[in-house]
Image (tube, rainbow, N blue to C red; front, side, top):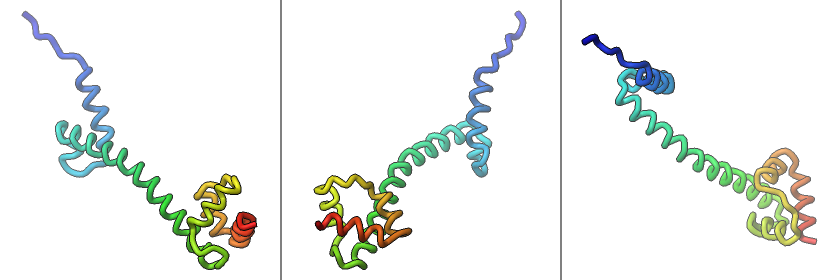
Length: 117
């Protein structure tokens, strides 16, 4: 009976995983088992850190808005500004407010004065 050669499917799967881990160091880019483990670990970290990144940026925007608002002394806190924005139905998200706070403080002061009236 002649020898039957295996197909290319397993090799193709392993090369696909190797391409993913090609930039890893040491055995993490050479050995198939450790490559698969590191791939799972990397994807888990990426998934977790996407949510963390969103939280961190939101915190940064809130901090920037709060700093500018407290300098103005029209408001004493960020929360009052956001509350009044919601009452007046001015739909500006925190990202846009933070950009306005950095680039054009007088514009943010105008917005805050409008919410007071």
